Length: 429
Ligand code: NIG
Ligand code: FE
Image 1 (cartoon, rainbow, N blue to C red):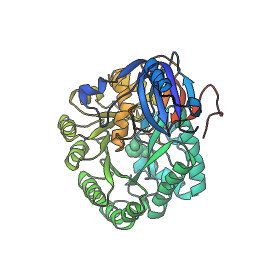
Image 2 (image 1 turned 60 degrees about the vertical axis):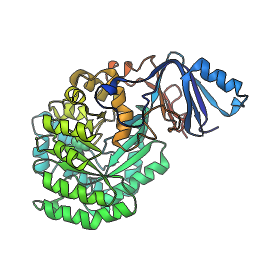
Image 3 (image 1 turned 180 degrees about the horizontal axis):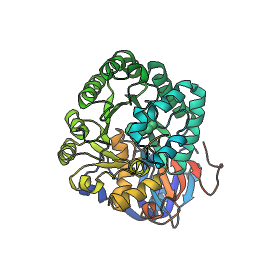
Image 4 (image 1 turned 120 degrees about the horizontal axis):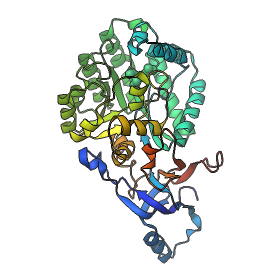
């Protein structure tokens, strides 16, 4: 029956148990059960434990187990589904030309200043129909699912006008109806000032607050509001004004913070109690300590630093400072065109000095917390969504170790098998 599933005999079940973000040293506590099992009933986790105990209990209960599908996970590791908590997955067109320019030495910000970069994707996204964006989004979600992602955040921000921002968010609602992966929508109208408002950023923030945020909030098209708080994009003052006003309409705050220049985005995130501050390549010590104290998730995007050839965010320092670190792909057509969880994991291990345990927490419970979903996703705790990945290897340690290669064999969403490497195309609700 759909949503009823037993996964048993796993070499390990990695529970990541918890209902809020794990900070600092807590990030290493994974809760590993040897020879483990997970039971999912009507889409929700009902029991996690040693296989022998769980199966003995089920058998002793006299229940008819014919209504359950069963997966024998012998020799395999079983974890919560990954939560990719920062992406820009709905976009028109591509920017392979720009990538080639960057290889020759052009900088990401120079291309944006010349009217390319984000603005080039804005032009393509304005031209694209809702159906075209949905079709492209579905393919991207398939690719993410194969990497073990069961919940993904998606940002608008390639419209920069009312109609196209709303169109992007409506596409995310369509994707939620059409695809098993859950998309958490974020409004990012403040991704850049559009050509119509070039040099008039304050007026553009006024426009967003007056013409777009009220509709986004009243139609519940987004849960979060994000801003590119960056030199020559939006200042700390402009970001503060937008985020505090949007929060009054019920949109929680996120920031692209201190990515290229140290502007004080981390400090602002702590001041306003943002759900997360993301990128943080150039965040100050004080800003990071303030984020740790305020419980703001630090969402790190190492594949973006890799793709831009920028120095990596100081993940090790952040965890040692007591931050809750999450890891995400930042999948977008410009700074990081990748859905690859294994690439993110490998870079976090090799260049941020995160331990495999910390990487797993950052990709599961802390990603869920950055999306306000730590109560329902991100760990294998009874009562949570039955979102599970089965690796083809016996240990979670293979995630960063198998360099850039996905070790995910099966993905289960709400108790239903939705991806199976051994039966491609066969498993799909
Ligand atoms: O997170 N830094 C700003 N925004 C995105 C990139 C968007 C784009 O280049 O299209 C990021 O890297
Ligand atoms: Fe981003």
